Length: 570
Image 1: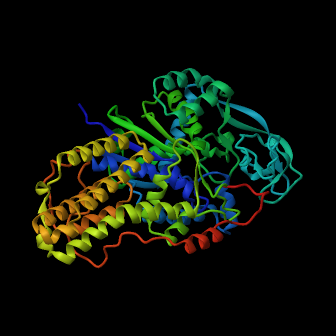
Image 2 (image 1 turned 120 degrees about the horizontal axis):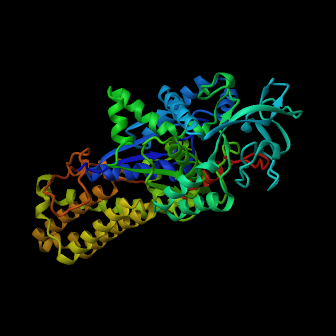
Image 3 (image 1 turned 180 degrees about the horizontal axis):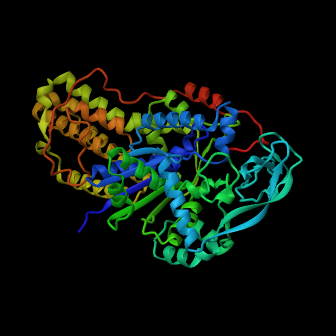
């Protein structure tokens, strides 16, 4: 029997600019933590992601940057790729939805859907700009939302209330490119996916899955409350995957039709770099031995739980369907939304300039918006860093190294983990903690996992406080030495437990113990491992710096943004 393998995808970050902390918290980071954890346990993992590059926002962003859209996407792909690498995201491959492989795969599935009778053509009314000489895609049209009154809703969605819209519903519509307010509704042909026809297939599939509460609620809202209707899958954009029908040239596929296929296409692109794309595709997308998990924020769930699976099921292709959708709520910024246009909130390039990646990784994991929205503020960020990273983890490590270096040579405190001597009750407590942590990590429960990691720091600090080696070092130096060795073992346990969450810190801890930072042992059977620990004294034993209130106040002022209430928040 084949050993289970783990396929992981994070929602593709859109290409139109640098992403903010919410994108990291709601998909990229939890996916990376899960991937790192599984690899640490010895599992075969494929972690795939890439930039989502088609659609109107990319064209608008390119125009605003005075670049052609392809050059803009090339540039922003490299910008995003570097940022994610600096955050320590451990993708097997980070690709692009504009790759040739996605053109091939998207068009291939389109023909399968067409052959199976799930595609139809219809003539619809669409806004036309005489000033620009073309039909306008939904997102090229701005106007007032008919439901909440938001002034900068687009032709497909209101960023004020989240409602999905049709362009003709907007009040006072105008072109977001030229500002043309004299738009005409004209008739034009488009292709539609008959979603209503896929309901029996979707219902059977949904009933066989055990979704989380957030995902299940969103599925119910769309399937039971609102019902599925045919969805237009083509657009009049210039940038996208061409519709492979001559009479519909030069239309392209709607970005939410082609983007999910990029998960498969990027995997194939990775296989092409290895010279064996077909084997890679078969191993990860056409195997019963794969468990597939998707990570995303809640606004992406309908597309991954309904629209894309509907296409895959209707295509009659035997491609792997998702087993678990780990949906997240939103990370807000100081009581409101992040906004590019309002310069409100911290974006990922800025974050790395302010503090090291592990500060952000730990904080965003500790405040992961799993059961409800979480709110970021610099005050809360500083409180978590100061009390947990500095006070809980960093202080213990600093005390142990200072005590050891002041009283012993490095050779005196070197030992095999088999020599650790802790009382039975403490061994039981630690064993249970690691068992629970492992279980929570497999369940992808991020915040609860952080609680267990934090509990280990508390146990270690309690142990050294009770043992008081700084006192017994004079009366019983042998016992004091054993306590210090035990404390170094705690640091070793820290390195195991934090490795998926704050990997740069884990590497530093392991180097300080004379261990290979690349080969991190599993959480299972921590007492059975025989490893030689040889602490390396250094002047740089401070893992984290405290964040002063003056810094909090300064950063809060800088990133609060400017009030422009008529612009959409993104």
